[in-house]
Image (cartoon, rainbow, N blue to C red; front, side, top):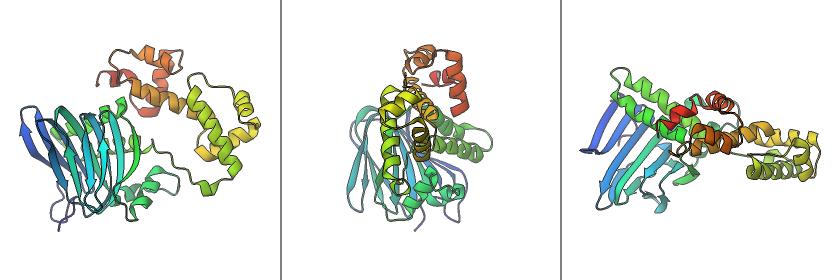
Amino acid sequence: MNSFFFNITDRRYKVRELFKKKDEHVTRVDISNGLVFFDVALSLDEDKVIEVKNLDRMNFIVAVRQGRCQIEDKTDTNIVTLHENNTYLFASSRQDLKITIEKSKRIEVFILFVADFFIKRYLSDNAYEPINFLYQKLQGEVHLELVNETPTDALSLYLIDKIVYAKDSEKMNSIISEHRAIEYMIHRFSLLEHIDDNTFTSEEIEIAGHAKQIILLNYKTPPTIKELAHLCATNDFKLKKYFKKVHKTTIYGYVQKLRLEKANLLLREKFLSVKEIATEVGYKHQGHFSAIFFKTYGVYPKDLKTSV
């Protein structure tokens, strides 16, 4: 039986229209060995089922732009319901899957499937890298595990469109599609936060965790380091040292990360300007906000506004 991904007799970039009718479609694109996506846009009077026969260990990312769907692991009948405007990261080891797209006036779903042997190419020596964490998870017997769920941000939508429309390129579809899919994976995987509790002392985890919770609630106008240390019942030195050790970033870096992630969500809102979004997340100057956003994500906020 063939792999869900390319088999040894057919390694070509391939676009297959599984269903096509006016502005409705179900498209499968085999980008390269270990990388496949489904692009779904339908109006349904009844539920539609897509069967995925899976002999591979893989992660897959599901972005539901409109409507709702369910994914079922047919091995142990584990069912996960996926909702509009959310993105989900799953791990699965060789289970056949049933994707049920629920009837709706309009449903749009994008799914990127990534084989473990594709992920293996990019492993690093840093055990804390999200991609190392995901690869190790797939080496066990994983039954449709939901690894991460977050609201879909503007950058994700922008990158999805780049992946989908790469199939319309006149040349080098495979290279262009793979490059854009990797951009998308980098963004989605970077949202994972994995902490190995066995690596840190209880004091380090407690102080770093408390500081993180305070920042989460006050990232727009965060306390100073001295104020934060006082709130965490510690001193400046310990706070900065423990926070960076546990969360792999500085306190300032974490504040900036939260601001940009919130901005990335707000950029989906058609009625908010870039200037209003910058102010909303704590930046006084739009130019400064745009520069930091570009440095982090490689695209300017105004470009994301035009794509949503």
